[in-house]
Amino acid sequence: ELEAVVFDLDGVLTDTAEYHYQAWKQLADELGIPFDRDFNEELKGLGRMDSLDRILEKGGKSFSEEEKRRLADRKNGHYRKRIQRISPEDLLPGMGRLLRELKENGIRIALASASKNARTVIRQLKIESFFDTIVDAAHVSKGKPDPEIFLTAAEQLGVPRTNCAAVEDAEAGIRAIREADMFAVGVGTETAMKGADWIVSDTSKLTLQELKRRFR
Ligand code: B16
Ligand code: MG
Image (cartoon, rainbow, N blue to C red):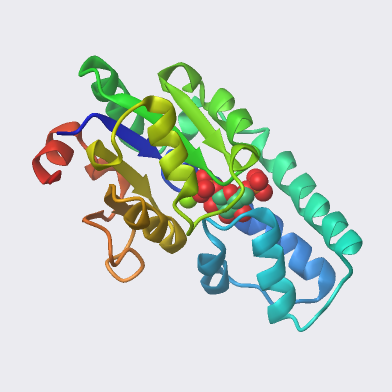
């Protein structure tokens, strides 16, 4: 039976994925590395350093660890500038309703985000009080597609993993959910979300009633 729902942040609760794209694009432009939305798809859900490594690899550039840290910080600056504008209006369609439905029905709620900026974003969206636990990159050692972040969320909620559903918009995230033995809900296209147990084209289709029906 469904006891808990674990949410990814970027691309599920709000479209920070767009801001990550813009911030990486700005950094890539500064470095003279080609960067487009297609390539950005591959970065979704990956941690900051993993993403940077992919971009540098694609551009055929190598930097020292020290320089890479500086580049990652620079990207984070580009990103933080953009997320300051986030407000409750930036919650993706239907997500405010879903969070309320879950609360009213006693279903526990967790956040599992690879972003170290997750709490800032959740605060700006004014949805912090819905979450029973927030697990972000600072709490885990292995990033998605490793299942650690989802398993940590279930553990902190005290709910068996098989009674959890998790919602993701990234390939790496869907893999992590499946590895964690949870019910995987994918937001996106059939191709990008292949492997998910239930795929919705956008967040407005995510209702508790339908989730319960699909849940194994
Ligand atoms: P930060 P999620 C992920 O968040 C993003 O999808 C990914 O694009 C980003 O690189 C990663 O967080 C790290 O974010 O640089 O803010 O620490 O989708 O797992 O909520
Ligand atoms: Mg995401």
